Image (cartoon, rainbow, N blue to C red; front, side, top):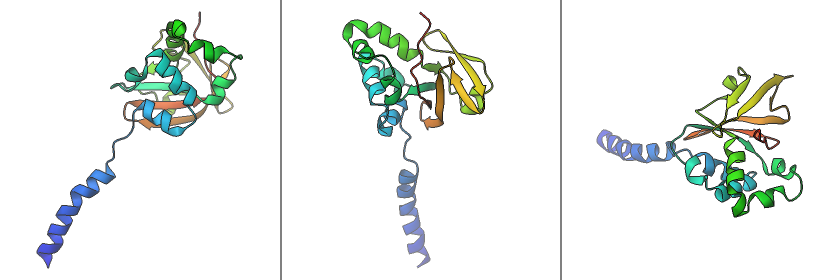
Length: 161
């Protein structure tokens, strides 16, 4: 009976490990699965950045929600998604990405972060809220992915032009 129990346990262990160690999703798949980043996903596709953000990383993404994109002036998103505006769209989107995995505990200790786009993102903590560039609030933090971290923001941040 002991041999049977040991064999059963030995056979079950690989199954348990497979189920218990399901791979985490990358930044793109995590954002898509959340359901509130449809505009961001469409923009990443139009800018040709899907494969980059599915890459090894690590990346920190300040991800604007669909509601954040809806705050932009009428027609802005539609215009940016046009092929002739691909470079401008890529610049805006890469401004939301910081190289490395910067967790919320680290974000609150800094005054600015250098984006992948090259511009600096101003960071200010006031009243327990983290603000980017003075107008975008970080509303959810530390969404872990297998290639970085996502912090959700309520307003699209624009790079200095």
